[in-house]
Figure (cartoon, rainbow, N blue to C red):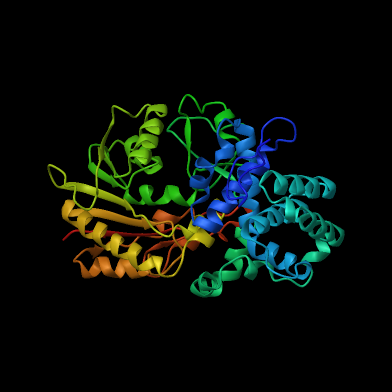
Length: 433
């Protein structure tokens, strides 16, 4: 029977007796993030073990892998006293999965240890099965006491990010340690799904782990998934019926939908074919296919037939503000990545400026906590000739703490911590003179 490749790198374990698709998929995901710096979702899509797996196994694997990544630094420190030397990365991945189950997912200790040993064997790591068994038994014996004296907040955030976040680092890190709830934006006139709480922003919030496709109204397009903070930039553009608006870098389409339901004539630009396919799927479910024009192309070179009333630019960025939902971003991004990202953001800002009629407005937004991608880009936009159009207190009565002295929007995961937090977003508004 095939026991997986000798190097244990993401090869599919056997099906049938002893198969464990949840942990096999989780192994592939964690390996993809740590070894190849692939995003969690990409690693899931590329997991050999995920091929043919049912939706529940994939969802459980996603949650397990996300838990490993959310507590990566802490789990590594827990293992340190029990390891005489650093094991190969595939073995470490098995151990991390075991620790996550024992300490953060309340898996019975015997199950966490036994499934980790089986995972090691399926991955061609049989020579290390004894090590896995011994180490995880010791972790299980220590229990939550293994966490005593550890600064989990600081361990679970890379030092370069901790330094960049300044005084907000600890409250943000505390928020990142918890699973994010499911946030939904309701289409106009739609009812709030059963069991959801309605937030001051109008977002419907359900508990973490809620399966959106199983909610009544999903198939009919009554709502779409969108973090409460992510719903703000399109709202702050204040699109009016009949206005000609471009949504640059539009996929997956939540902001496009907001603009379309506001009555604007929307053109959605997206350069990645796979993301465009997802945009089309979402627009179709929401009944917006005939109301939104889509363009597969590069927003830095695309230009409208006539100058626009408004542009929404939710620019590609480091995405550190989404780490509650995507803890992988903390471990795949590096400080050197920011230069290429900010250069791209400046090119998009210049392109957006050139799309606007005189007096036309632009909202620039990023789901990033990094100052280079937020305030520094707002100042770069001013240097390009765009005129600041600050957000007012009246526009942010539902979230006054997100309004900066400059009139920018700044959210972070520690806002609304008592009711589940929100993603980190920066937004600024400008007009073309």
